[in-house]
Image 1 (spheres, rainbow, N blue to C red):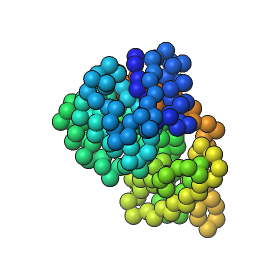
Image 2 (cartoon, one colour; image 1 turned 180 degrees about the horizontal axis):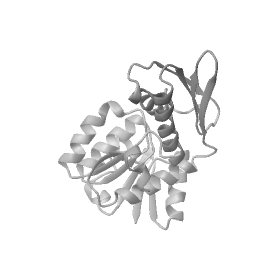
Image 3 (tube, rainbow, N blue to C red; image 1 turned 135 degrees about the horizontal axis):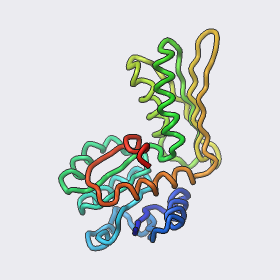
Image 4 (cartoon, rainbow, N blue to C red; image 1 turned 180 degrees about the vertical axis):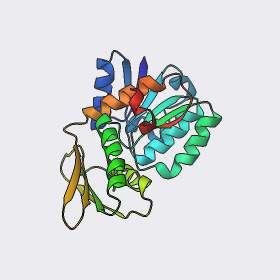
Length: 226
C-alpha cells in the first residue's frame, strides 16, 4: 500500500518507519510544506491508500477537511480537535470518505480502557482519579487518553466524579494512572509507553484496516479486529 503521513514530528517519523517495516511505501509531508492543507489537493491524494495524521489540533482540522472532501481514507492520531467531530463525520459521510480517529492507538491502552470500565462497575462507591504525564511539547491537556479513561469510568456510573491531573515533563511518551481509592485501600491501573512505537504500530494497522472502507470509527471500536 501507499501511505501519506502528515507531520514530521517524533511520532510521525516513527509511523513512517513502522509503515515501511510493514512493507508499505510512505511519503511524509511536514506542516511547513502543507500550511492550511494547501498540499492536499485531489490529484495529490488520489494515489494514496490512506492518510495518517499526527500533527497539531489546528492542522489536523484543516487536513481532515481537505482529505475527507476528496474522499480519502484517513487515520487521525492527533487529539484536541473533537469539538469538530460532528462536522468531520458529516463531511466523511457526504463524500464517501473514511475516517478512523482515536485518542490513543496503543493496543495496550485499549486493554486499560476495558479494565477501567470493569473497575468502575465493580467499585462504584470508590473515589477515582486519573494522573497523566506527557512530554513538555504536548499541546492539549488533559490528554485525549485521559479523557477517554474518564469516559470509560463514567460509562458504568455517569454521576461518578473523576479528577484528572495533567503533568508535562521532558520527553515522556505517555504515562496514565487510574486510581480507585476508599478509606481502607487503593487500586491502581497504570499504562506507561516507553516509546512512540506502540502508537505508531497501532496507527499503521489502522491504516491497513481502513484502506478501501467508507465510514467513521473510533479506534476503540475496531481495535479488537487488528
